[in-house]
Image (cartoon, rainbow, N blue to C red):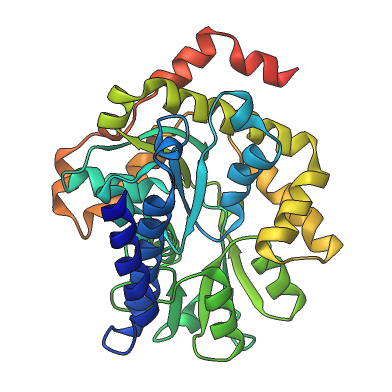
Amino acid sequence: MVKRLGLLLVVQNLYVNLGGNVHQANLHAIRQLISLLIITLALPLSLRAADQPIVGIAGPAINMIYSFVGRDAGFFLKHGIDPKLVVFDSGSVLAQAGLAGDVKISVTSGPVTIASRTQGADATLIASFVNTPPYSIVAAKGITKWEQLKGKRIAMSRFGSGTDTSLRLVLRKFGLDPTKDVIILQMGTQPSRYQALLAGNIDATIISPPLDLTAKKQGLNILVNIAEMGIPYPQQGIESTDRIIRESPQMVKAFLKGYTEAVYYAAKNKDLTKKLIIKYLKTTDPEILEATVQSYIQVTDYTGYPNIEGIRNAMDEVLLRLPAVKTKKPEDFVNTRFLKELEREGFFKTLSK
C-alpha cells in the first residue's frame, strides 16, 4: 500500500508539472493517460475487481451517451457490475490506454480495433450498436461545394481515430483525395474543432450531433450528413480483448447486458437521454436536443451485431496506412459469442416488449 501511495504521488506530480517540453498536440493525450493511471492507483484494491472494470469511451461525443444511460439508470448495477467510465479525446488515445491493460472494455470505433489487432494486440469487437458514421462534414460559411475544399484545412480528432477514417472515406466518395487535395489536421475533441472552425483556424471539420445541428443554426454549411448516406461502417463498437474474455467472461457479458438495456431504454425514455446530453455535451436548445436524440435513434442498430460489410469498408481505410490488414478477414476482428448467448437466452426479446 505504501508503495502504491508513493507511486500515486509521483504520477500526480508529473501531471501537474508536465508542460512546455511536450508538443502541444500530444500534451492533452499524455495527460489523459496519466489521469487514467492516477484513477487506477487511487482505487482501493476492492474496486479493481472483475465486477468493477474501467471502461474507456472515445469522446466526448453523442456516442458516449448510452454508457452514461447504463450507469445513471442503474442497468450496469442491475447486472452485477459498477464500471468506472473514463472519457478519452479519441479512439486512438483510448487504444493506447487499452494496451496498458487497465481499460477492460472500450466503447470505440471499429477502425481502432482493426488497427490494434492488426498490429498485434488481441482487441476484438464484441458488439456494434451504430453501424454507420453519425457525423456531418461542416464547412465555413463561404464553402458550399466539395470542390471548394481543395487545398483547405479539415480537422478531425486524431490520426487513426474513427473521425479520421470516416472523413477520408467520405472525401473519396465525393472525389477528393485526402492525401493530396486537402490538409487534414488532428485537433482533439469535437468542441475544440468546432471552436477552431468558428475562429477561422480551419475550413471544415467532421462532427456529430448536437454540434452539427448547432453549426447549422449558426449559419455554417453542412456539406453532407454522412448518416443519411447509409454507408456501412462500424462506428460504435464495444471492444474487449481475447485475454479479458477468457479470464472474465461474466464481467464482459454483464457489461454488454447493461449497455444493451441502456440502448433500448434511451429510445423509449428520451427525457433522461436529453438530461444526459445537457449534462455531458452542454447543449440546452430544446430543438437541438430533440433532433439529436432522434438522429441517434435512427442510426442505432438494435441487434448489436457488427456489420461485416462495414468492417470491410473500415479495413479498406486502415489498409492505406497498415498494409498488413490485407492478410485479414472481417471476421478476424469480431467475437459475437456474447450476443449469441443473449439471443439464445431471449434477452433481446424481453427488451423489445
